[in-house]
Image 1: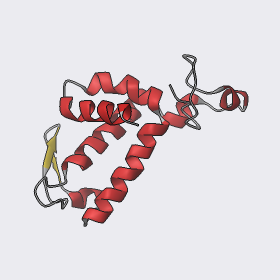
Image 2 (image 1 turned 60 degrees about the vertical axis):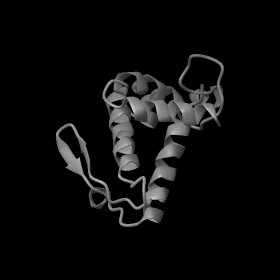
Image 3 (image 1 turned 135 degrees about the vertical axis):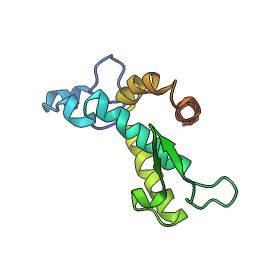
Length: 125
């Protein structure tokens, strides 16, 4: 597990490392509530699916919860911007392991491939 605040490896079931807990960091304020974490992960799943498997450009349309999204909806207009957005979100996922772990189980039925990809990517780090 990792501290929600600083990302340090922790061995307890606490959400924060000793240093962050001692400093008075609020774990809910760092990662947000579970609904906010789920929303952020779903956003990450949608953005990741915008990239075309053939050419690599972010020109796909993704439908989630009955709404269609394109790269324009996220301010992305190039493969480079898409990659920067993905890097930012993947860093957030790495730094909020405990909150992400709790949310992945709830998202698995709606996003099975995306959840599996997040779990697989984390195993290889």
